[in-house]
Image (cartoon, rainbow, N blue to C red; front, side, top):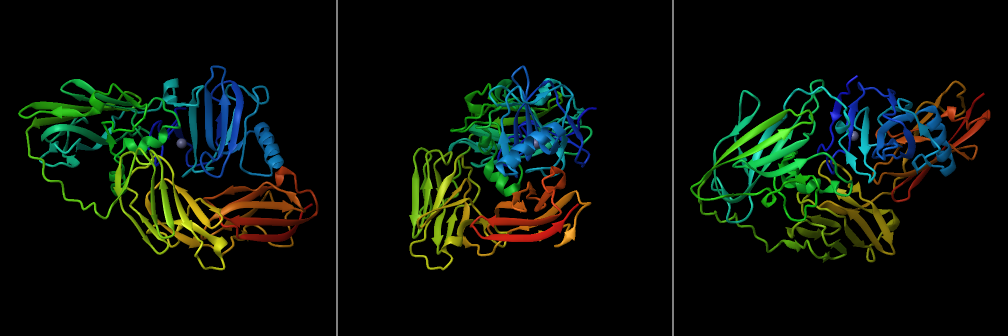
Length: 532
Ligand SMILES: [Zn+2]
């Protein structure tokens, strides 16, 4: 059966390149997952977020295959991991079995597909990593998908590199008019330009059997027949994936929700996906010349789309840039740390937090910190500190730093640490932050049972847990004082215990669940149930 994909390798995601293939499972969970080759289980990781329940199999050739968002593992692996979970008294676990512990045969059923972790719908995430943990495009290993359609191009943009460059008389990003051709390629209305310019493209690929908009596998550009740049999504390493923010036009993405892939390389961009870059992908347009810039977009099956951009070289006086008043802006440096301070709030940026030196808005009003807008990409965390020394409240310990979103009633909890009278939050995005308070404990609601009932025929015990303001931090469930495994899904807010774990063996059972939020408020739920 040829797989149908909802996601391709290298596809542009919110903060990373997609490291594998998302294989559709007909909107269902519980489909059998077979090992792609012989090997041994080298890692099992279960987490609330990310890949959810994930299995890693290392093969004799040194490659590792990864299977993510699983519903459950095969009986043998399930027994192994449950032992670890009961041992550590935690649903979230990560183990690295030895090569002789859990051998796997080719085509062995290893798991069942699911929707665990940060998955937006049932599917199998499949990855192949080399011996340095770098994901490779699994399509390189002969996974065939039905794809006879060439990629689509939605937009082409031109960017001046410096103050002397102009495009159609402008010195800022210009959207070019696309003229679709019958064969699926595109022409672009002739542009007049001068100086050093770069281009960007928005594009996606679609396979024959699915409507999903997938990533393309290769983009090349040529100037007057000479290669200018190539972006090849074949392999990358996880520590470079965050620089996706440098590949795309981040400001455009934040305002228009569409990703322009820049076909030029700006400073501080270490991505290894680029090949054959000439002059970092920029082209030089001289006065009174006629040139052509071409973009070639390919999917993995080799279907390709060309865009022709005719350019007339014509000197134009660069217009005075729209005068931006920098007097009320604050400069954050790329190559050194920067500290901004006002009142009881202090912000620490480090070397390489920003890609370029940036003028940003920095304003403090009472407990609210206006720290620019999330339209400048950051490559590292920075810290926001609130000094609470002069803060009067009986609930000092229930304060946290939250990010203010226009569409949410409450500020969203940002991972906050407390040291003496200082609260410190770590974040990687500009925006508005404030001090928030949570004095309300989480709620715990039984879903499929009531106090003092017989649950003999029940397979599962299910409760819903929720915390409105700071969010759930941890939970712990016991029966007659013994820890029981409850699987937590943040998407459904459910905690579920499987009686087949065979931990609950008494007739009369006292259930106790303690749930704690991110500032330490906790709730306890108790109920009695009977089983025989
Ligand atoms: Zn995926």
